[in-house]
Structures are given as structure tokens and as C-alpha cells.
Image 1 (cartoon, rainbow, N blue to C red):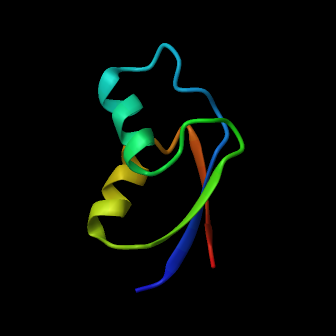
Image 2: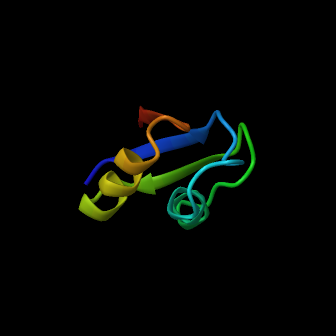
Amino acid sequence: MSKVKITQVKSAIKRPEVQKRTIQALGLGKIRKSVEVELNPAIAGMIRAVNHLVVVENI
């Protein structure tokens, strides 16, 4: 599988609890924090759930 770099660009304040927990599960939590993860169906679903808060780049 390919790797992706996920960067949080918007705050999770005033977002539903599910979205806050998804951000935490991805390893994010602060604006401009980035993580590199293997892209799999579970990660792709998490990205889709919070795509308005993050930017995704292929590595």
C-alpha cells in the first residue's frame, strides 16, 4: 500500500465528538501537525470522515 501525509489544517473545536475522536485516532490534534501513515481502507474511511479538517498528500 502507499503512504500518505495527513496534515490538520482546521480546528476540531465545535465539531461532533465522532470527528474529534477520528482526529485523535489519526494521530493529529493540533493545527499544522502532520503524520505519515500507510493508506488502507480503515485510514481512507477516517480521512473521508474529516476531509474538511485535513489535507492529504501522497508520498
